[in-house]
Image 1 (cartoon, rainbow, N blue to C red):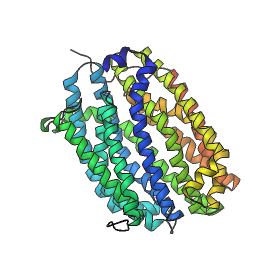
Image 2: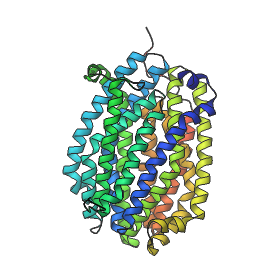
Image 3: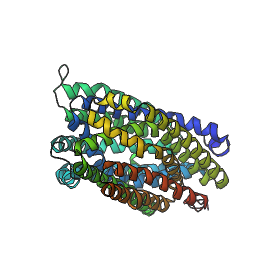
Image 4: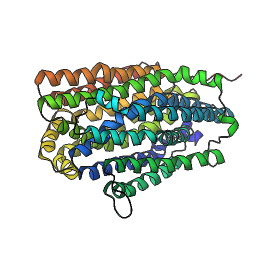
Length: 456
């Protein structure tokens, strides 16, 4: 596959790598949509609970994800340079580092969840559901994170199919378990919102165990051993040097969404109903994630190609790969946005028959939806910076879009017009302006250099 990535036809290779990733993303989104559907049967507050938990979980996972991104860049570039033994050693060191980090995060998250939810200004009606859900999800983070590391490592070497098989299996298991644990079907206990979290944790645990088994048995392109898992302090220094900017960028982005949650509850409470505003945001987020499943899959495939072509010093090819990806993403999200606008009422009614939420969704379509194709460009550029190892650029770009644009525009316009419409408009403007800045920075070509050492 390496030869096809660095020498083959760009679009064909991109689609070959992307289709398993797209399937994987769609299956993940299907889980989120199903979760939203079942919890919508319980009520507005239950539907909103997972949406409050995931920004918190994402914040802590994002710290480690930055180092996983650095590991991805090293592994993919070693493969591109045909230094396979170094790729295996890098993979082992990264996997053990991520495992230890996830255990610490899980423990901390379970303890700190009440204080974090209070900081987010979660409404009193949503809070008890959010707390119970959040604690279970944090308890399962070590399994979720090692599964994530498995996916990253295999994607770095160009194997996008094996992770999909495992993820599809775990998500399908999750889909089956969801209603049984939520409603107490058959011999299962009726756990409500907590049932959705338990189903997620059990499914991720199974996927993590299977992924670890394949890595240690050498059944995939990466072969981990107990020897390769030993701390490699010299390599860790390199991971931290490359990974800290990405980690800071990812975690500050995630923290920004924690703040955004607070803004939505605050503005929603001032100019309407807080639970309505956040429930509408939660459903919108699930729907946009469905659209992004296609563009994200293509962007991730592009990341593999860019990482290996940069490793092979084929910089013009890497640029062409990225430009074609941006054009494809913009077209896909444009079509998705049109469908979203045309069938808004039917889509939102499918999840919850709540007139207030349907009314709020009209503002989403009017002030936010047109910006979605631009996020496809932003996402592609961000992936170029990360996969080429230029993580400081990715960090600054992410911080600009969220902290420099989305948060001040969403809050400022919401207060200015005294309506949640201003909040949705601010979110939309951040996508458009962020894409313009990202594309201009990409065109400078400052990301066209390797981060791995030269041979000899």
